[in-house]
Structures are given as structure tokens and as C-alpha cells.
Length: 548
Image (cartoon, rainbow, N blue to C red):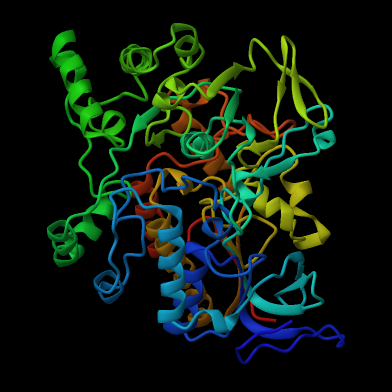
């Protein structure tokens, strides 16, 4: 075990844990900013742990071919707090590739000297709250025991990889890789028959790249998807310079507009004819990115009739792109547009026009077993040399449950969340004093720009810590009533939309046995206004303890 900072000593041979002010779990966007802000702005002693071999969080693990940010991201999927950081980093494309995101985060860690306080290749195996001492003690697989007043869980909304439980899947003898745990050494598809299970974001991004090399690709599709053309292109020097010069205004716009500086449509569909609406859809499709979803007409995710019109427009595009009518039919989604994670692609549907790509629709032809060399479905046998699992994650709640912290009265998080993911503000939980989550259940999370969301949540955490210190208080936690009210608010907000009508990882439907619950706050900018209002109002919904 090696650490380069002043807190590098292991307590494996000592009965008392090492002590610091705050422990951070995770070294992705959220964890890195929390470390910088709490250490360098608040002056706290901080230790961070991450299972990866370096910084990056999700981007350290997700190295599958074609990995990109699911948004027209450059330069907006990045930290916003430092003009100097904006000025000294150059983004090359409108839709950032995974390796570029990772390089950026490595640059951030170096620029702010963050790695000295992060212990990598270390899994947190437990976290326990000491009610008498008002401290959290964290244990790791490397024998560390570290205690702190504050525990910040930046564990990632999309981290715990979901491996499907198909009969005999472990009998397959060829290479098998999950897109969320991709090898760091090069993976060659040349001369191989590759089976890909899953057509979510990572599947849609990787399938076109795999098909360029493989002898044959068989896609096993569980659910057809709405995917929009990314229209990725190089950023011009003029664009890059303009973004840097106008960054303060862009940052303010991002704060007001749900995390992105792009205007959302105020056009009402009822004010336009069907032909005019179709012309608008064509324009948004040609521009690419998320414009069809956010900039066509008001209410696409609320108005069922309007949503069906947009859904059918995208289905028409799929029919026109894919040459074989039967393959096109299999690719047509039948759920409400936008109620699963919207995906940006770089030639996904066009890939099915290749001679070396075939599609198996698992709704009609389900997987029944695996052999050492093949996938057996109801209607056929599909020989493969390599299996790629693009089967997603136990999203939002899974990474916290993997740690399974123990709060007051010895209650584990698995017990607390057995039937409902109860939080207040998506950041704290009754019974778990001074434990903060970044992008937890009930926060905007993946529906907001996550780097900016992490910055703003960390700023609120800092307000909590300052409030405790200035008031001479030892601990804070939400009340059960505040949790219940927040849960009702999240659910009511979702039920006014079409989101809950679709089985998705937004509702936990992708994991057998997971409680069904919409996991995100749908109004990002208003959410952060609420955080500020609650702090300004003396932290309504929280109870406090005197220092012990």
C-alpha cells in the first residue's frame, strides 16, 4: 500500500483508526471536486479512496470502443469552477471521447495536486457510524481503518456493472468483457465472431466500432432504443476561443438551464400544423445531439400525443436508414420517446446495413443457454468467439449498497433501503448523520450535467460543514418526515410525466428484485435553488446534535 500524502500510514496493525476531518469515496468528477473544495477551500484534512488504479471514476473503467459522453459535451461536460482550468484545456470534438475525458481528469488531478490524498486500488469494505464519538470509521480491503467526522460518498451513479443471469453464461469459454469493466490493454476483434448483448448507451456506441474489425457481429437486443445522431465533429479554433472568452456567461446559463447552456423550446405544438411540426423535427434531426428532445416543442415528455408523434418520427428515420425491412422492424422502439436514457450515436443504425452484422430480437427469440462456443436462443444457435456484455449498471443506488454503510442503531443501508430508496434532497439520510451523497437517489444525477451538479452539491455540503462548526454542533441528519416529503415530491414530479410508464433503469426495472421507484429529480435548476433555500432557512428538515 502506497500513498504520497501526509496521511499515508496504514492502521492495519493498530487498534485505533487513523483520523481526519473527511473521507471521500470515489475519485471521479464528484470525488475530485469534493477533495479539492473541502481540502483547499475549507482547509479540512481529507482522505479519499478509489478501487481504480487512477483518477477518473466511470471513465477509468469504461474504456470500451466508441465510448463517448452522451451529450454534445465539449466544453460543457467539465468542471466549471475555474476560469484558469477552462483556459488551459483544449477540447477537440463536440462530443467528447472517453479517453479525452480521462486525460482531462488526470490533468485536473495533477493541476490541483489531488492524487497525494487519494489511495487507489482500494475497495471500501465497510463504513460504520459511532454515535458516541459522532464519527464514521471506514475499513478497506487493504487493512486500512480511518475515521472522520464527515463521509462523502461520490461513488458514481453508473458504477456497479450488471451481469445478466442467463443459464450457462459462465460456460462460455471465449473472451468475455463487460463494457463497464473494459480491459486496459487493447482488445482485438479481428477475425472473431463477436456477440454483443445489450443496446443501451455502451452497446450503441461500441457496436459500430466492433463491426469495423470483427468477422461477424451478432447483436442480441433486449430492448430497441431511440438513438439520435450525435453529428460529432471537430471543434474549430474560433469556437474554442469563444467558449473560453464567454465562460462566465455560459456557466451562469448552465446553472439556469438544467446543466447545459442550450435554450429549450418554448414552441407549443398546438400552434403549428402537422407539416410545420414535421419540418421542425427534421431540422432538429439534422442539427443532431439532444435538440429533438429539448428544442422541438414544449411538453414532449408530458404530452402523450405529442410524444407519439416524435416517437413515430424517429421510427420513420430508423426505417429509412436500415435497408432490410425485417431488421428495421426489430429496431423500432415501442415505448415513449425520451423515457429511457436518450443516446447519441455515430452511425449505429447504419451499422445494420453491413454484411457482417446480424440482429437477434430477444423478445421474440430469447437466450436459453450458452455453450463453450455459442449462444443458444429459442430459434437458433449463434457461434461466437467473444462475448461483450453491454448490459448496464445497478444504477444510482447500487454503488451505495455495495458499501452498505451502518448507521444509528446498527442499521445497515441494505436494511433501510430494502423497499424504498429513502433520502432527503438525494444527499442525506435519516439515521446516517454527517454522511453525504453526491448524485444519490432523489437528486438530479444523470439528468443534469454531472460535473456541474457535483460542484453545486459539494458547495452545499461545505455549507453544512460550516454551519455545524460555526454553531458548535457535532452532527446533522434529516428527519423521517423530511425524507417522506421528499420522496412524495420526487414521485409526484415523475408521475406528471411519461417517465414512469416505461421500464428503465431510471425506475430500477433493469435489476431483478430492485424496488420500483423513479430515482431522479426532474427539475435540475430548481433543485439547486431548493438546496440554497433550505440552507438559508436554517436547514429546514434536519435535526442537529451538540458536539460530544
